[in-house]
Length: 109
Image (cartoon, rainbow, N blue to C red; front, side, top):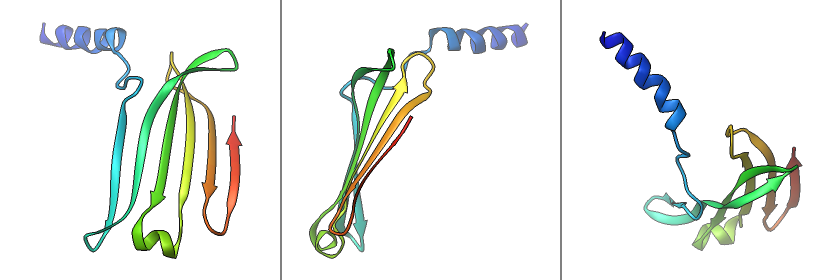
């Protein structure tokens, strides 16, 4: 009997499961080296957009150095990710790196 209950709960959790994040939600990170803050990053669910007529979540990740680390090796990276709203598959990724020595833009679809 208990096996049937666990089986039922397991499969109904997939049916009523919701997305674990919401539009506007963000996570902020701080990087430290010997207790000195050298960088920060943010991961943000920006909006729902269409990619090839598929509704998708647009997620933005931005990382940058601060303070002395910024003077030694400036980093300004941004990664944009579009995830299918229905089945959570990655549809598109773009990567920008803007530092003192390099700029590049890569896109994967």
